[in-house]
Image (cartoon, rainbow, N blue to C red; front, side, top):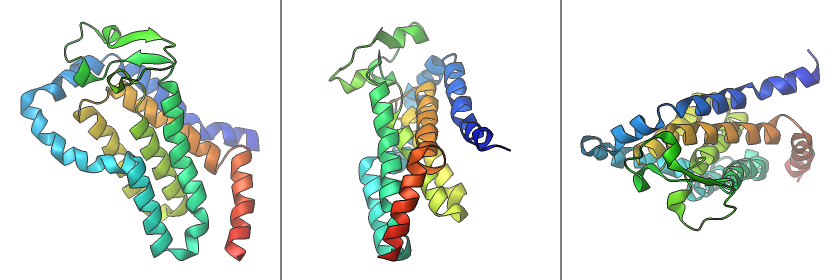
Length: 214
């Protein structure tokens, strides 16, 4: 199999997640309605525990733990940090393309299209209008991918934590399912560019080789 084919295969998962996000538009409103109901609000506290894995503070704490507990792999810290940061940043950039109200800011929309306001706003200072896509989920997926690359034996744990971050964003009323799936697609795509495909992996490989020798 050629290198081009292998590179293309790396992007199958992001494409599948993006398509799933488009399909999830059909269930966004009813799912959000379920989690906005009072009987289910008690579950939010439990799920909120997992938000940290998709938050900048959580990323920094994990990197500090890596720095202190696994000194032989300190060379990987810049790539892991860059992967998580770039994933969340890319999702934040996409927020500049469309205004979408968060479920908790628009509790009873007439249809899924009522959750969207207008295109190309470029900037909106109101976080209640920045639902699409989920930057927390993108950050969590980018971080999980980098940690799986570094610690493959923990792949199931890291993947589960990323999934739980996505669930937390839905349960908390911060995002619709489509926001989370597209955020996951962004995280997968960006992490692929940091870990497997393009110029960045080769650059990091050379830098990390030098850092290991110092």
